[in-house]
Image (tube, rainbow, N blue to C red):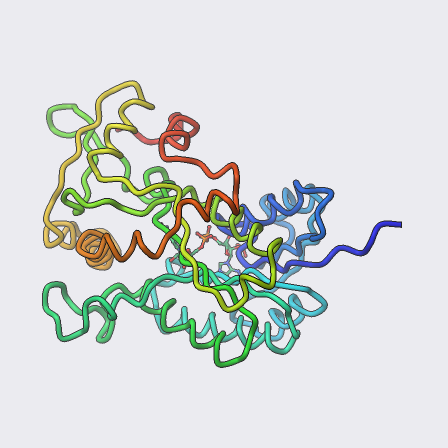
Amino acid sequence: MSEKKKIIAVMGATGAQGGGLVRAIQRDAAGEFTARAITRDVNSPAARQLAALGAEVVAADLYDPGSVARAFTGAYGAFCVTFYWAHMSPEKEQVEARTLAAAAKDAGLEHVVWSTLEDTRKFVPLTDNRMPTLMGKYKVPHFDAKGEADAAFASAGVPTTYLYTSFYWENFIYFGMGPKKGEDGKLTLTLPMGKAKLSGISAQDIGKCAYGIFKRGAPYIGRRLGIAGGFLTGAQMAATLGHALGKPVRYVAVPPDVYRSLGFPGADELGNMFQIDAEFQDQMMAARDLREAKALDPALQSFDAWARAHKDRIPTS
Ligand SMILES: NC(=O)c1ccc[n+]([C@@H]2O[C@H](COP(=O)([O-])OP(=O)(O)OC[C@H]3O[C@@H](n4cnc5c(N)ncnc54)[C@H](OP(=O)(O)O)[C@@H]3O)[C@@H](O)[C@H]2O)c1
């Protein structure tokens, strides 16, 4: 008789990072784990897709701590991610992280992978005016809130791997950051990155790397590690997108101030983020290990492979 599988409770299971993890676990039929997919709506099409893969699908809402505690009970481990862009409040994101850490502690989980990012105030303190301070005490709120929330897991004594993620290449599809037709009709990729390299990854590969971490277990507990699928300049990304799309894409490097003033929701925050990515590219790249990411997820995609696979979904108008 086969041994009972260990349960990994996956927050954000119907989303990008968590979805990659649920699929990786369920695809590995011979593996030691099974996924418990957490969603607010067990009847949504996305939740049903996960159930069809054999995942247990359970309901919980991060704003109902009891439901999260129940969703973690009996599990071996959990993948913890928070949802900044659902509300754009760093304070709410920290409440979410504390709820996750407390539930993990109460459930006695043996391994948590916490999807985090750097607190950018360690690079640019609030007194540094090279970029505006946002919401009173942040430089890049969705980074800073996650970095600050690392302490929730540490102080609760939860056995945690702190996983530093990277810019999703899917932002070129869903987040309005992809190439756009300029006045001359030519496709243009506009980023405030100058000639610096951006750490990027396909979002689903974050979940796949997390699966590699759960499989390796103990040596990863207490570790901080960063993952990326590639480090590329704006010019390199534009050239690769152009190649995949079969039409040239020009890179236009705008100053961060110009990007911050573009007027879309979050433009100021993303302007600050890209400025940090550019000015601290060495630190951002040093904190992310392409080789380790590839070892954790042997099918890790390069940007070139990602662009070719997604060329029909990248908007070009
Ligand atoms: N975009 C980037 O480049 C990038 C890069 C690195 C990190 N990040 C970070 O990634 C995080 C989001 O992760 P993601 O992209 O994997 O998420 P996502 O694809 O936007 O969705 C995650 C899922 O979370 C669930 N969810 C939302 N609010 C919830 C709540 N209150 N309680 C329980 N579940 C809830 C939703 O599922 P249901 O509707 O099924 O409940 C949703 O499908 C953000 O904090 C962001 O800062 C983004």
